[in-house]
Image 1 (cartoon, rainbow, N blue to C red):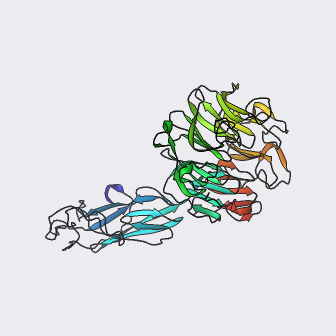
Image 2: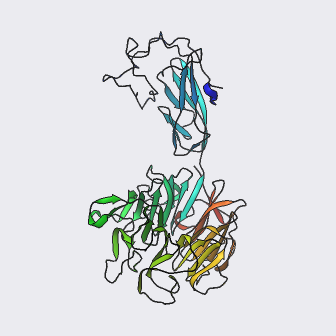
Length: 502
């Protein structure tokens, strides 16, 4: 037991007197010497002229013990945390620091430099400090747990509990964000230190909303879906690129968002002021502009007028809808059977307009020709239903939202839908690749059914084009469905792939 009840493990205390510590005081300009990062000798040299060499006066500082403490219960992979370091004399009085060198018992679990520990892989590691004839060490538990997942067509991405992003699968256009175009069979860290609150995946590209709000995208940008303006055109963006917009054609401004969704080749989000922004492919007006009078590619975010303040936005393949603060739903894009609550068919563009549905919806998500959202009494879906993706036990399209069940945390993509019911994953719709139920050879599943995952509760689920993934409350991640191009992230064990942790 150390000072102030800190839980520490101190192995060494040797000297009653620290003598003549030369060259560890000040740098030539009088500032405290931070030390050499390559040796790790840098914890806290004081800014003092007490000693004859500009360092600590050994006559006043009899360091008897170095005490190390870790300020939290566990360290996450890719997280950095500074150790708590105290220097005390025989009476337990705190003293000024002395130089320390640092080491880790296993650098495949954690590394340390200057008293800052970084998690590398799951396990237990001992961090040791040495200096002035003293040594101390502390045990650190490094963990990795999945928090959420986003599935698309041929690639998948997930977030850890600290918001670090990882992707796997096809990487032809850099959609994995690792700085290469090399496909990955297992999770690979996205090349950024940004912490994300959510991810949104489209066809061969990825986007994320950071914890602080700024939006980032990477991958295929041929349709402007990554948000990189064409004057600096790059077809493939290999690492996360921050998204900017221009207000009134002026200087670029950072795009901060509270909600983010990716369609097939376009992206939409809502900023803190309730404004809707969309960018990317506009061949059907899904960015909010009439395609007959506007460019088919919108390479920078533009606002979509939706009346009242928007709370969030949901994207299908060729249309989008935004939920507003007055409880209404505004939709725009191509009107096909039922997709916008209209009973017309055809490629005609529908400008943003309120739909006046009888139910207020949130947590919007869309597939190839349908949309879903959560109401006060459960999940509602409407639009195309050729694969049973509306969960009504049939394949008839619906022009207005119809309740599916008391599902939460739902996800829709292409022609199937998944949701959580009391912690159990249910899916319905197209099952051609086993993306609904890998244990059933039935091609269409028109009513919700359990996905057949390992027992236990689940906290997140995502439907892709031909595969699905879910995260358990314990941080395990499972994917099922089509396994080609590494999109499942792990080797199949029966009908499931468990995505490895780090």
